[in-house]
Amino acid sequence: MASTLLAGILAGCSGAKGNTTGSGSSDTIKLGVNLELSGGVASYGESLASGINIAVDEINKKGGIDGKKIEVVKVDNKSDAAESTNAAIKLTSQDHVTAIIGAATSGDTVAQAQIADDSKTILLTPSGTSPNVTVGTNGKLNDFVFRTSFIDPFQGTVAANFATKELKVKSAAIFADSASDYAKGLAASFKKTFEKAGGKIVTEEAYVAKDTDFRSTLTRIKAKNPEFIFIPGYYEEVGLIIKQARELGITVPFMGADGWDSPKLVELAGANALNNTYITNHYSSEDPDKKIQTFVTTFKEKNNGESPNAFNALGYDSIYLLADAIKRAGSTDPSKIKDALEKTKNLSLVTGIVTIDKDHNPIKSATVLEYKDGKQVFNTKVNP
Image (cartoon, rainbow, N blue to C red; front, side, top):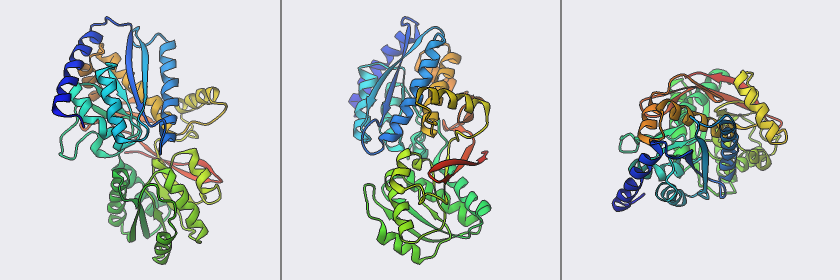
């Protein structure tokens, strides 16, 4: 986090920036992109960047926002919170951006939140799902911080309801990343909803990010004989967990959340091992919705026929969410954009129809996907 002195310097820089861009003296709108383009979760950052690029190109080809073209300043935070902080300092104090898109993960977004508020710069995370991204652990709203994705408690609730109502399971195990706020939030909401529905959590186990051998813990889980295993985590570890679990003869359904959503998950786990697994996610490329299929077609044309994943869609939507607010604000003054974002209501995006609530979170639907032979297959859509 920035020191008090640094925060004052950043706020001063922002004031000058806001007056300049807000007056219309520039023919561009400068947006910072602070993403995990290398490091442990680079797959997320790269996918978000692809979606962002398509949206920016589309808007600029149509004349920009009120005649101003979007200019992107991209920084790699290397999947590291300290690097994310440094990137935010650079983007606000040196590049004088109007807004920052990023980061992909909750931790790397929280690392920028104080800087965004101190410098009065919009910070919009496409996929940071932890509640404390927009509302700090002290309960205070981060005034300039917003998100495009839904939050962890919603995902955990959807997963628990799917397990009990659709899969009809009565017992479950939870296997979560012990150091991840993302995993902890999902695990807590899943457990609360599952038990409220009459289910029993037979065991809770933990792993540490970067672990590669999960066999001993999986053996303990197997001994408890759960009908279902919930793994709120990121694809790097989850892929190995699923692979090793199947090798140990664990055949029950597994479920996770959007942190699983990477092509590398299939590489790590193997297509066959992923059968009978599910995730909550932000959208499905198989959803017949016209807006979604238009996006899918465009993405495929630009990416050699590859179908867009949820991170591609969230990156794309983040630009359109911000562009809508800038247009309604009639200004590039971040304070006016903030007010416009707070008033967003029923905005149709690829990942859902979005209304921003009092905590700067979008009220939107969630999608449940099933893995079949290595492919994500649309299962159902769940409304809030």
